[in-house]
Image (cartoon, rainbow, N blue to C red; front, side, top):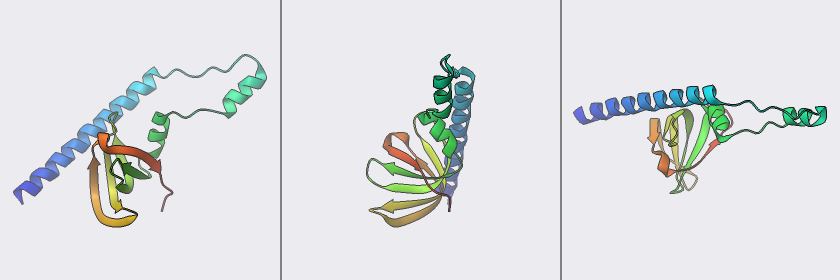
Length: 127
């Protein structure tokens, strides 16, 4: 019981630190981002406006708070709501389900995944 409470406190602390790291990273990125200026002629300006390239950072910002699938190097998948992540791809998720070989193995409330284990993150359709 004492160890369980200690682990809960540690997890809460990790989530807070990761949240602060993400907030700081996003604020830094927003402050240093340079807008893309279109070419002077109107045709290429229209094309530049129509086709905006999304960076990995843009994608990750867009899926915060949304359902995602996280695949690990081991092949295990975690599906849940992306709570936060940092520049090292450390991930905190909520309402997490663990899948091995496509089969549901476990359900977790909150989950923390160390970034060096992450193969990819993909957006999921909302349930």
